[in-house]
Image (cartoon, rainbow over all chains, first blue to last red; front, side, top):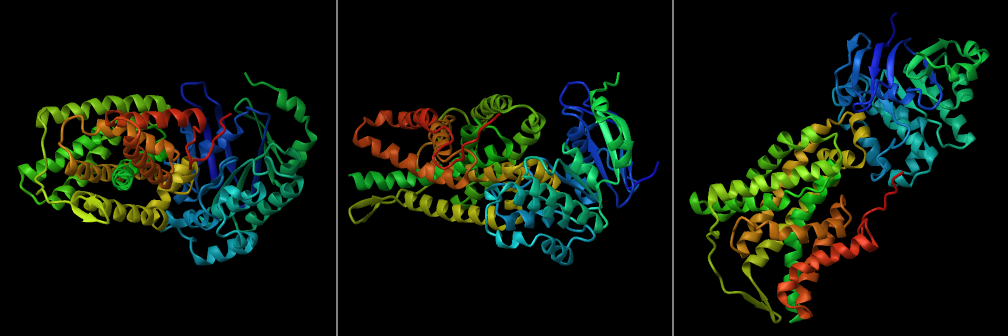
Length: 240
Length: 287
């Protein structure tokens, strides 16, 4: 198994409760889009948080391009090349769009690829942000906030982008826009891991789909294969 | 008379603004009300007294040493206690801060005794201006606080550290995912809060005797100011402090002066009943 990002037998959980992520192993090919789907409570968000470092791993390993990230803080993982966009609270609501964008790179000095050239590329991808420069991020619409979150993540010149349900709560028009943005991100050479409730949208753009149930990986394959499977039965399956 | 009271109220409010700002900064970033603040102010006053009276240093140098010393004390409180409880709820941290308040207060009693102490300040005749009686200490306090408030505004809005402090207060997990080391920012915020409380301690000690309960007497009005401004809002804390200072002094027009302390309590009570998020804070709905 070799990939840009590799998780090996990863386990994590909250507080003193049982593991939420129960031994997931996964390797992501460079430049690919992988969608993680599964029913509510299947550990999708916990898995992506564990990769980002916001939920400590209890066991297992996480490697990015061979570098072991397992015990690194979220900030160090960001410097190593991981960008994470959470489902909720994806921007600093009490700060302006300009401040949000400034903070995206201010603490990443020394990371290759961060700089004016990247800024030019990213701001050209999201021209609407230029008009909202002085607005508080908390006053933006859900779709605009998602775009700002994407822009901030991309400014960090990541190798790996982790997206936690980027389409949640958005109108269908914005869902299409978000999915198109994910595809454009891939064109920048960035590998994407996307957790999604909107299975149809996820299958539409992913190269590979992973199904989690009960904190375990129960199926994986190309989108056509997963689409042909009986997802209802898979989602209802319980792994002992 | 009302003009004199209003002037004194504004100066009192400005002095309250520094610890209120310290309280609101640490609340924003560590999510608990620091009940050790009063004891920190007491510690700062004793540090200034030790530098000024025991070591014979000029007041300005003593004040700088007190601010730096209290910054270190605040960082030590974070490193020894609060950091280890960071993942616990705010109630646990609040109770820990109450415990640390007793530790600090009794450390001061042990080191400096229970007698009242005073800084070595020459007594000067008050100035008169348009019928107002203005003490030199009041002018020093007002000017110092105003300069510090401008510096704090510049720090919070125009520096990398300030933006990081606001980012951690706004959304700590996202800040971590943006490359900001939370532990370092929290520690530096404690240092800044300690320094602000240290300067406030010196300004308070210019006007009154230093005893082990010095800071405790300011705890209620400082909490009232920070809550009035909406805990976590720096501008709110300053405006809240000015309002509390004015309310405390002007209450002398209608209440016997021994009830002055009750004004802060009364304002906290009314706020919790009518506007729990403060005058300038944002309402938060938790589900």
